Length: 251
Image (cartoon, rainbow, N blue to C red; front, side, top):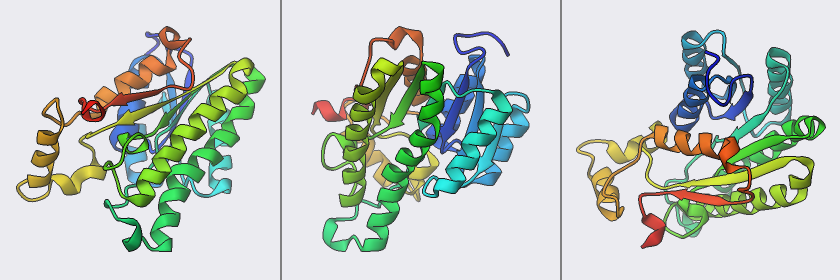
C-alpha cells in the first residue's frame, strides 16, 4: 500500500509481536508505512511478516540487551533506509506486587524492560533521526505513570520513569527536530492482560465496572492515538502524556 499520511515512512516498534505493538504495526502499514518489529516473540513476528511480506521486517531480540537493540536498528536501516518514527511499546507487568513482596529479581526485570529497554532503543535510533533533522517518538506509559493503583510498586515506578524520560528527551532534542510524547493506557484487552479474563472473567468485569466508560479498550484504539501523535496534526504536541483510559484518571 502507498496511500495514507505515512507512505514512505519507516516505523520501528518494540513489542510488535502482540497486543498494542501489533495493532500499531498494522495501523501504520495500513497507512502506507514500512514497519520494523522488534520483540522476543519470534512466532508473532513471523506471523506479521507473512501477512505483510513487503512492508514488515523484523528481528527477534531483547530490549534489555544493548547488542540486540543495536543489531535491530542496523537491520531496520539496512532494510528500509531510514527510521522516521519510534514506538517504544515493549513492556511487562508485575502482577500488582507490593514493595514488600517485590524481590530484587522482579524489580530488575520490570525496570530493565520498561525503562532501560526504552533508553537503549531510543539511544540506538535517536542519532539517526537527529542526522535527518526530524523524528517522532511515541513512548508507552500507563495510567500507572500518573496515579497509584495501575500496577504494583515496580511497574508504577517504571511507568512514572517513562513519563519523566519522555519529557526530558523531548526537551533536550526538540530543537533538533525531534518530538517525544507518551501514551498512558488504562484497561486494554491484550494478551498481557489475559489473566484478568481467565475463568469466568470476574477480574475483567470488575475492572470494566471501575472504569467510568464501563468497558475495556481494544489495542486498535491505542494504535489510532499513536497515529495521531506520530502525524502532522500533532506537530505542536511536545512532551505530552495522553491518557486513553476510559476516564480512569478523571475519577
